[in-house]
Image (tube, rainbow, N blue to C red; front, side):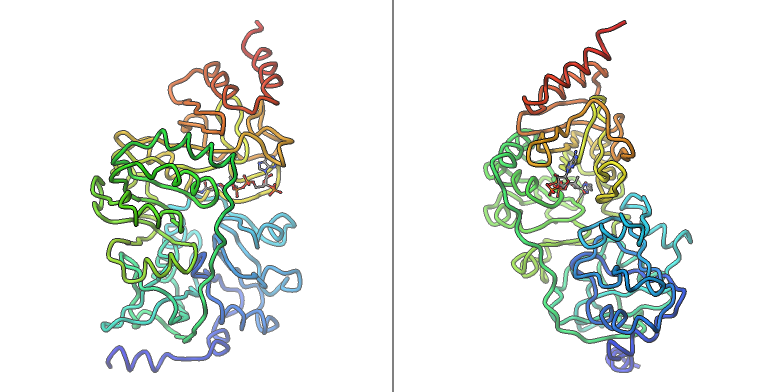
Length: 432
Ligand code: COA
């Protein structure tokens, strides 16, 4: 049978596909901008059909109906990262959170800790050989599909064909639902004066020829604004968004000096606007690989002069970085932060930056504190941390004593909070 005949044989409606998902099963949902739409809707529209289906994912875009209170008993979410639509359910104990490094997620699926019964994914149209691209998310989506007992794919004619280790053959899919849905987009971040000052400070740590890992949001995009005069930058990152398009067009990002995958932009997922999705479609300069490759510190470290830039919620005077909790509340997840902090620290010439506004909650709270809040989880340990950057400057912590770290951090804290920090410092370091 040709793949085309196979494809036709596997075509079902979203409702028919949803009906094949058994109760008491674990379902992994395609990630981020590749979150499936029609089959998920069919599931929640007929929730009574299901008992106790565990829905596992990291970032999920869309309304997340399965997280609502009336879904109790039918669906329960197990979050490997907490995003906007899952935050409330996790904090109200209507969903669970599993701490894990992003690079480890495929091994959780493949090595039996979280065996996958169903992978519900969204892919591009097959090419002439019958290979569909995972499009915007290779990350854990491809590994989940590789080890699931049942693979249901929405074949969306709007999903770009993105290169790399990012394909699934029609023969590996059990049920195909053809769709034509606009892809989820995220709004461009608002970059204010504080973010610009942070961006300018971070850019001072980026040399010509460096390879970049940048997260999402206003700070990474602000950093990009100050890189316009650099030369031959490269990309090896967990994800990228629209911010880098301008640098590519300006010839600043070439990848020519990369020590791993020269000339290629390597990522594990992509999320942004339609302009980004059009740019990556069938673009041989962009390659996505599963996250156990891209975010593996042993792979990251092969990128000489890599600079990773991430953010956090709070940091104490020893340099313990809290990025995923606000007190007892699980606000996000570790994602790839520690993967890159560790990979960059092992790379020749590598640097890891945690970049933050010095205050939070409209300037009423210092993010640099004597002690982290009760119940907080430390994401990047004081042993791993390298640079902390705020709008007030750069604090290099690696190789520094506790006392030197505290001094450096007070130097980049907001002036309104420095006096309190100095008192805490004196209590700790100047009394016998
Ligand atoms: N105490 C109390 N509230 C705090 C706080 C603190 N120390 N720090 C931040 N907040 C509040 C902010 O005020 C804001 O609330 P508001 O919108 O009501 O004002 C909210 O928490 C979010 O803070 P903000 O810093 O604006 O969030 P962000 O969107 O820039 O994300 C992280 C920051 C740390 C949550 C995010 O970078 C993250 O999830 N990091 C971990 C994962 C990671 O690094 N992945 C790497 C690659 S993508």
